[in-house]
Length: 402
Image (cartoon, rainbow, N blue to C red):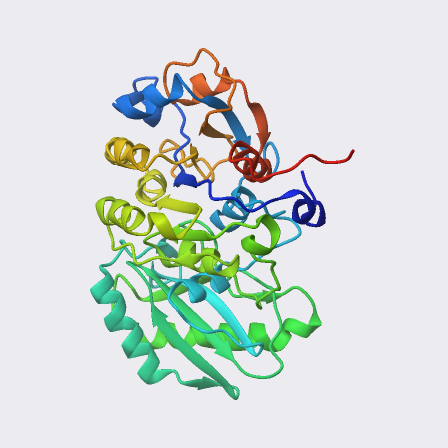
C-alpha cells in the first residue's frame, strides 16, 4: 500500500484515459443450482475481455472483514479506509447536493417499519417509491424544524433513503448507529462514543421519537433508522494525489457524495444504465478518469433476489462494447464489495477484478467469474492497490528510487 506522500511524488499527468466500472456488490456465492450470479449470467462481452485481461480478487479492507460501501469505495479510489473513516451521512448529504458547514452533523436515514412493540419488521419500509419519500420528508420538515436549539434539515433521497443534517454549535461525532441492523429487534437509539457527543446523541434520539409520533399513521414508513452520524473530515483530492482529472457517473446520492468528497466532478447521469453510458460518451474528452457505478447489482443482492441480480449483470455486459468503442487505455471491471444473494447482505468475500490494458500479463481465464478470477495473474490483493495498478497501466506513475 502506497502512502499518500509517496503517491504525490511518483504520479505524473498524461492524457491516457481510465474507466473504473464498479458493479456494486457483484461478487456472489453459489445459489440453488450451484452457480454464483456471475457464473449464471450470460456475459459474452466480459468473458471475451477476460481472455485478454489480467484477473484477480481484491479485498476491500482485509480478509474476513465485511465492508460498508463507503470504505469499500474509498479503497478502490486509492485511500486508506482505516485512516479516512467517513460517515455515511456525510456522503448522502453531499450526494444530494447539500453544502455542509463545520457546524453540521449529517446522518443517513432509512424510512422503516415498526410494529406496536417498537420491533423493526422492515428496515427499508418495503422500498417505498421516491414520490412517497418526498411526501414524508415534507411532512417531517413542517413538523420538526429545531431541537434543543439545533436546526434540523431534512432532504429526500431515493426510495426509502433520506438525509438529516443537524446544524448548530456543540455537536460532535461520530455516534453509534441508531439502527439494530436487522429485522426482529427493537428500535435502537444513537449513543455517543465519548462525552463530547452526548448532546448530539440526545438531539438525534429526540428526532427519532418525534418521527415516530409524526409518522405513526403512515405504515409502512412509520419510523426511521439513522446511520453514519459524523462530522466532515479533511480528505485530499484525487487530483492532488494522483494528478488525474476524475469524473463520476452514478445514480445514487451516496456514491455521488463520496465522489465529491474526493474531488470528482459528478456528471448528470440520469437514472438508468443507458443514460449513464450516454453521460460517459458525452464527457469523454473532458476527463481522464471515469468512475462508472452500477447500483442495482447490490440492491438485488441485499434483497436476496438472485434472478434480478443476474439480469443487471447481463444488462451491464451489453454496454461493454460502448465503453470499448471509446478506446480507454485502461478498463477495470470489479465490485466495491460482495453482496451474495444467498446471504442478502454485504459479505467478506473478495471481489472479482478485471484489468484490461496493453501492458497486462494475460492468464488462461475464459470468463469473468469468481472462480476464473481466482486463477488470474493478479492473484489476491487489497482494493487500495487497485488505483496504483490502474495508474501504472496508464503510464501515470514513474519509477520509485534511483
